[in-house]
Image (tube, rainbow, N blue to C red; front, side, top):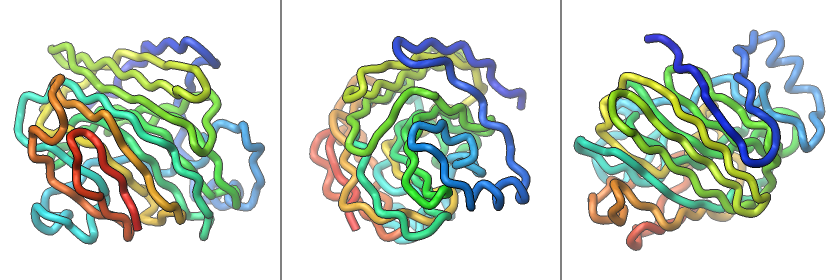
Length: 247
């Protein structure tokens, strides 16, 4: 499958760059370096935010060992998802700690994910925050726009048909918005609001809260989405389009 071509615009900050794959040696060297708090985290993401197979979630309700945590609506014909979240302050317990809240389409039993979110990496020995989008299986694309703990985000993924996807991410606290249109051959068979750790190593946090989630313009709960737990964090009951992930 060919990689999508980025056509992105930002209303604040600089243009994004595509993170390059790291060798294991480079990753080990970077793990010992202290990055400035404003550094874009090209080194923080050695893995993509990936799809999950249906078998990996061990059933449909309150899976205890899913790679994803949150809620996922399944079926067909998913054209859009919009949702907001607060990027939590974290305590790093390991340099392997890496996680992100995100919203997206596909990935639950399919082989692509069209998604956007904001991650925190502890690879430098402290929490470093960065925003990104990803058209999996292509690598994540990181934005150089500022991100900090406690920031309020709104993300959306919308397909306009014929494999075209509009991705938008706004940091409501910092006051910037990034938009891009991408192309990918995808199935549109799920829509989700998720936390994920590609390293299977979450930092400690009190809660990650999502709100205002809509799918195809409807309240998220109308689709009876499946709750998933991940890394010791489980979703609270879904209230319309709002829930939190808590330990």
